[in-house]
Image (tube, rainbow, N blue to C red; front, top):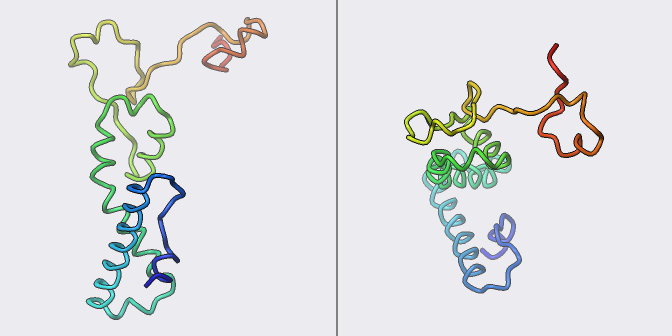
Length: 143
């Protein structure tokens, strides 16, 4: 059992014993779920890398509710990496919350069709070198 758990282990190096203990519990629970599943579905147990595919599907199912909850939080749109990760997992683009219902929508910046802020600023072509480093966009003037 130790060899099977260590082959697909999700443990990480940590100095905190409660975290290490919870990693071990998760590994053992995943192995137990795999054993129960293969005993009930015997035709699938002889396929190559079946345990790895089983664990990936288990991870996806366990984390899907948290991902769906997180995708409804408006602050997610500020962090590009989080937004991109949620888009990849859900396989659909995120739609920003409707900001028109908020009473503060009069002071909110202009937004494009996807609900993200439009990039506004000076023309890139007529800026000094120092200003170009800190500019929001690299687009040239239109016209």
